[in-house]
Amino acid sequence: MMFLNCQKPGLIKDPYIYKPDSIMLDLEDAVAENQKDAARYSLYHALQEIDYRGVERVVRINGLDTPHWKEDIRVCVAGGADTIRIAKTETAQDVKTVEEHVLAAEKEFGRPEGSTLLMAALESCKGVLNALEVCQSSDRLIGIALSGGDYTKDLQTTITGTGVELMGARQHMIMAARAAGVQCWDTVFTNLDDMEGFEKETRMIKMMGFDGKSLVNPRQIAIVHKIFTPSEKEIIFAEKVVREIDDKKAKGIGVFTVDGKMIDIAFYDGAKRTLAMAKAAGVYKGDL
Amino acid sequence: MQPPEKGLQTVNDHRRDYMEIKKTAMAGTLESSDAQVTVEPGDGTIELTIESSVIHQYGRQIRKVTLETLDRLGVDNAKVTIFDKGALDCTLKARVECAVYRSNGITENLPWGGVIK
Image 1 (cartoon, rainbow over the protein chains, first blue to last red):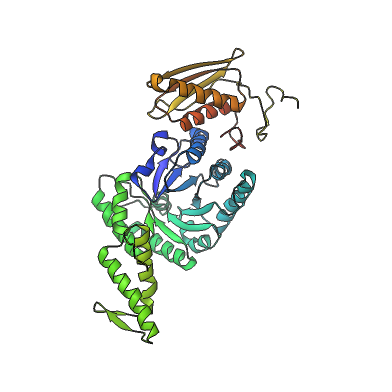
Image 2 (image 1 turned 180 degrees about the horizontal axis):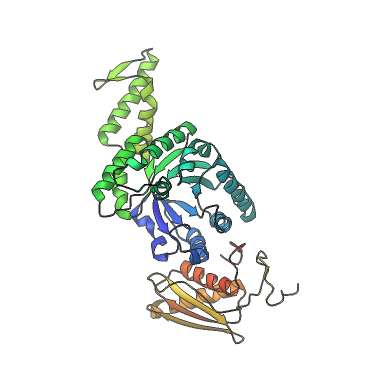
């Protein structure tokens, strides 16, 4: 998910050329306080007139503690944004409040009710601790995202580059998201001179279970795709696991080995997920 | 139907057919891919001035988009100055609309999909 400042026409006119999975058109922190209105006009026309070629269009709205969020919601829905990212989410009620206004906007602008999805950015200790209730707050909510800068400020520490300061929040959020059956995205990595550190962090959050990462520069996209796209070896193994489990189940066998590894039904969903991810990434054309 | 009295703005009224430029207002920047649009109270007509590095290729298009946008907003009396830096049509429309609504001090309950389209 690549962040783009709606205040800058040059940034939002053709980001699809970098092939991100999604773009996050920002009305919040990247936009100067006296340009909030200007950013909305740019956003509306970009959503209406630019063909983003299948890239999911997420819009980050201003927090509920600002005077901007209601008009942000109206323009997002009128423009046809795929998803609204709620900044500074702290409670389930925050999501419900946004949901009410999104529904009203869908009615006002003739959009199908329920068509605008939501995601919640958790940016404070309170928000992180309430992750589960946030994840369970709305049928529209597709996931939560960590906002590391504000979170570490609230935690009274800083981004160190080691990941130590974010470890608790990351672990807690991914568990909450999985418990609720929604997705979870990691925070941005802002040091563009440290691509090695970025790759290391991306590998770590993939291992932790995250579904993806927020990005601030197109240079980071290929690295995330490389890490999150299943390798050929992983795809072949996942295929074997799925086929063997299906075959052995019919024969009444619960536990067996594939390539020397003990396999049972517990591996089934993971293997299917690997294949689904590979299909989505365009590297698997099989029939499983 | 009687046209709305000048100066009376009901921003939710998508049928509004007139908008007054009440004060000078500006939107946009001189950055690449942007356009800086200034609107000022007019002398009874639209007076449009365009400066662009691509005036020979796109001058007519810039003029057309600007006049269509002003017409849609119901603006028929304004001095409009545009410094274009290679803005797409969608950016130009956004900057004209923003300048016009700023001149009226309106930032909320905007007619998205109505006269803004």
